Amino acid sequence: MTAIVNPNGSQRLISLEDVQDISRMTKRYMRLCRNGRHRGRDALASVTRVSNTQIKRYEDEGDPLIMPLDIAVEMEALLDYPHFASFLADVQGYDLVKRNAGRGDSLLGLMARSVKEAAEAHETILEAEADGKQTLEEWQQIAKEAADAKDAFAEIEEKAKRNYRREMEAKNVKA
Image (cartoon, rainbow, N blue to C red; front, side, top):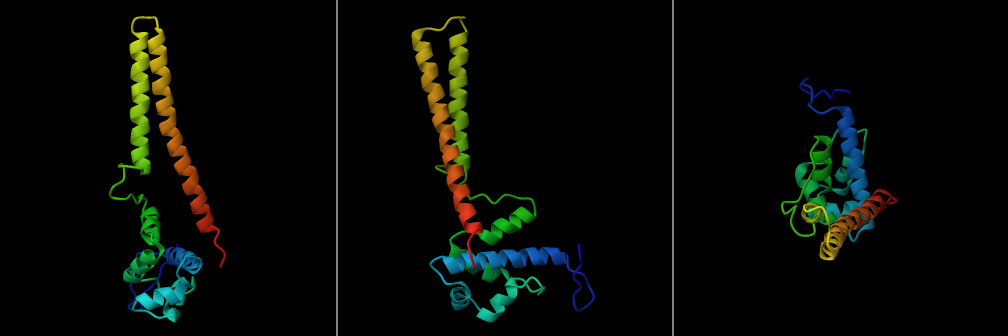
């Protein structure tokens, strides 16, 4: 890791490699702005306190200047997704999770539902096994509970595939 020395001789807490990573991410997010309903630097410059030229400097890996937080927040608003926040959380070893995660159609909510369904299927099997023989009704109930659990896991799989495709499309955006 290459240290960055400030003009006063002190060292920054982030390395040159960190700054280069941030610059690369900035460049990638600007590409997303260019290909979306907004038009890149011009769109960002029109809603922030910095010029198009200044924004270009934030993308330059050789320039130790990185995008200020207020500009990054404006960019995230343009992109309708917290790309920088997600990147910075990942760099620090955290996952960025929406406040309502675990509810509704979120990944955590779907996982909670699938665990509940799987537990109900397990309970049904245990009850059917308790007396050592299964009745027609018990087999029917086991099949229903297993199908419910399978459907819940299928929802997670479908959401994962859909989001994977979306992320791959975002990463493969051409300049």
